[in-house]
Length: 203
Length: 291
View 1: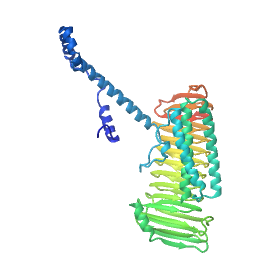
View 2: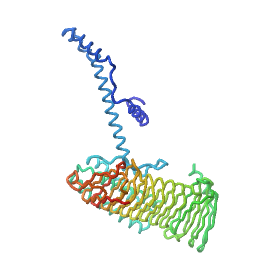
View 3: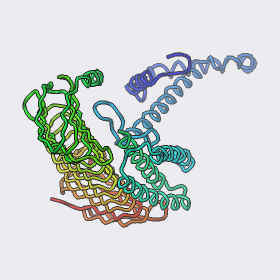
View 4: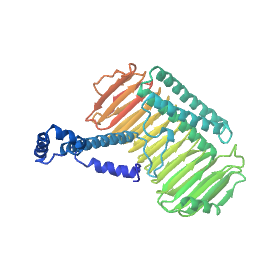
């Protein structure tokens, strides 16, 4: 770990260790008695003295105790949110083979975009990837037969029709997360089909 | 390392040329877990796992075909080369390999059939069909317009076709099947992590889920039919933008979609335990009891 950066392994280790910490810690039995005594003592000192010591408020035991509790609570919340996000990522059932290789293009990995704005960014990525792969197929680098190219075009037409239909529905209902996920899946299938065909045609 | 061995061994390839249709009968030593790469554009490729540390190739070559084979005990490669690459003569080859071998096959229109191999399989066709029988460790099968059939229990399956159908008959803990217009037909047990997706192709699942799993069904306009036995626990989350949801598995009725259109259904069968997510744009979804 250097500076403000933290690598994924260290983060995972930190999260694992943080997750083992208890959610609540009972304060020592005599803590409140000591805090109360300290509060009583400072109140007795008087207004004048209090005014002169206001700068050192953060040094008072009561303040420090409250700050410590806030810190524990805050770090627990951060850990919970972080772990929750990791679990959301694991919901994608696209697992890896024993060799560790993923079977999807970069654009389709991970969790589907959650909002329309996020989706439009991902959509641009899909479209540019699909255009690049289509250009390779059209350029004649591919050795696929005309019959195969025709069947490929028919499959692409089917996917494009589905994308267009879902895209129109999303335009009318941009907050619909299910539509966003479905569109992402259709784009992912298109890119994957183009990628597979390009690879097969190259050999 | 393996790639280096393969490349180095290619220098020592042995070639058979055919002026007319010719019989093929060749053999070579291979480790019990060695790698085999087979390339044949047209005709057929049949791979059979056997209990020997060697590879035997039999078959027939079309007129003008050349058969090349070479490699070492850790890995070997063979391919059929035609005089006319645009219109090659078909070659039918049968390759016996050690049952734990890692097998890679690529064809254009040649069909691929694999049986009795327990190693990993990578199978690629453009227009031919793929059929796998047995219990390989993992199967990666890809076609453009050919069909894929897997009968057995690979622990890991990835099967993709565009217009071809994909059929899985067996059990697997980790499955992804994807088509565009091809039908997906699964008779499976102990399915733990799975994803079945199509654009217009119908999806039919009959079988059982492993407790604690996650199974996704996605389609644009294909029908989705999921049938499980009465005692199999599953927590269903079904959503359709414009399609109908028919629940014949439990007594829960679908409700209007949360975005003001379509339908949604949340229900559990048995004691639950496996998350089953079904999403459809306009294809009908049916949940059934299959005993």
